[in-house]
Each structure stands twice: as structure tokens, then as C-alpha cells.
Amino acid sequence: MNFGDKVRYVRKKLSLSTEQLAKLLDVTQSYISHIENNRRLLGRDKVLLLADQLHVPVEFFLRDDVKTLEELELTAQLQTKLKDKGYLNYFVAVDKAVEASISPAELEEAIEFIKRYKRTQGQ
Image (cartoon, rainbow, N blue to C red):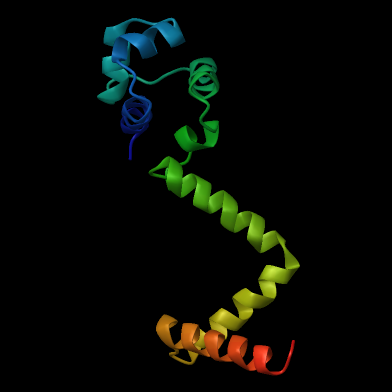
């Protein structure tokens, strides 16, 4: 997704018109149109203002590998979990399940079995 596509995506997600966005950034409506159609770029200061005014992480506009705000949120959540050593052990276990060709459904069954077993053992 190009920069202009991201600007349009966020603008529409927030139900803003090009005129409203132009006022927020102190530019013309035609300038917003040029940006959204990838004919012009915003300067660094305007990108920061855009992110701030729309309450969107500036990273969304700058990263090529992120296409939606939800994707950015999921990436941030995953990074947080990867930093948690407790979660890291579970990722290793899931990796072993994938290597053993255990399907997600089979893994869910195993988890349910373990839960039932623990309940019968009073744990």
C-alpha cells in the first residue's frame, strides 16, 4: 500500500472528507487529492502532524510492510508477547507442534484433554 493509499484509508476509516483533512493539515483540498493519488508526498512535519491529528502511529505511514491499522496493532501486540519470557516458552511449544504436523484442531483437543485431566487431579 502506497503512502497516498494509507492516507485515503485512514481518512475514510475516520469518515473525514478531503476538505476536513486538508483543514487539519493546513493544506488545500487539491493537495490532499494529489497525495491520495500518489502524485505528491507530505513533508516530514506534515506526516507527523497527520499522525498526531488522526491519532495514528506515525509508523503506519512510514512502514511499507504494514497495510492496515489492525495489522499494526497486531504486530505491536505480538512484539509485546515476544518480549514476555512466559509467552516465549509457548511459542517454542507451538513451533514443535507445527514441526510434528499437529493441526491447530488437534492442538486444541490436546489442550482440552490436559484441562480435563488437571480438573480431575484437583489442580
